[in-house]
Amino acid sequence: MSKSDITGIILSGGKGERLGGRDKGLCEYHNSPLIQYCIDILKPQVDTLLISCNRNLDEYASYGYELVSDQRVNYQGPLAGLEAALVRCRTRYALIWPVDSQPVPKNLASAFLNDLVESKADIVHLNQADRPQYLVALLKSSLQPSLTDYLNSRQRKVRDWYAKHRVVEVDRFQEAAIRNLNKPEDFSSSH
Image (cartoon, rainbow, N blue to C red; front, side, top):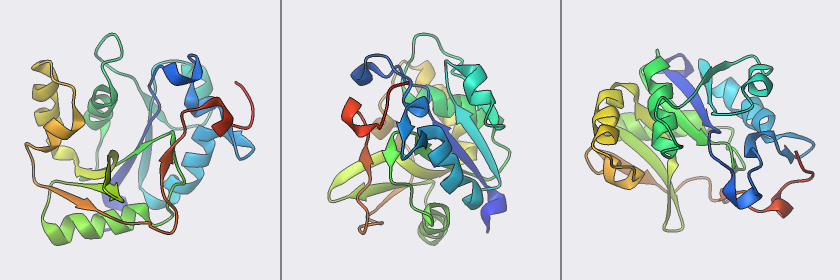
């Protein structure tokens, strides 16, 4: 098992409601757009990178990676973005990373792959200090039909979909607690 078995999926398709509608992935963070920061750290860890986004497609396309957009209407949540990406995934595993979760660990893919293989699980996700981060995860791309069925049943909770599979929570990366950027002060300038 190696990075050639993994597609990275950056979830950047939200409405940015807590930021007044700003597209988080295009907000400045450490002197570059947040999406660029994620790409720089994730790309060396995976074979292929997909960006799941629903607006500003021309700007996201300028980064040179394949874009996927929700096939479901009205922003039905992160699982809709994941579903669209898994349809395009050509590797055995998918590494999920929300664009607004920082910092990105440089050994994320290898650590999660080891956890997944050793535990014989379908999904491994982060749980730091008893705070589950369901969308910081590695999963088998073969779960796509299960996800589509789940979404077709009008369910949207990540936790509840995960409960249908073999899941392992791991407490990793304690040296840098991963947090979600949701407030204007989290970013260095407006977009």
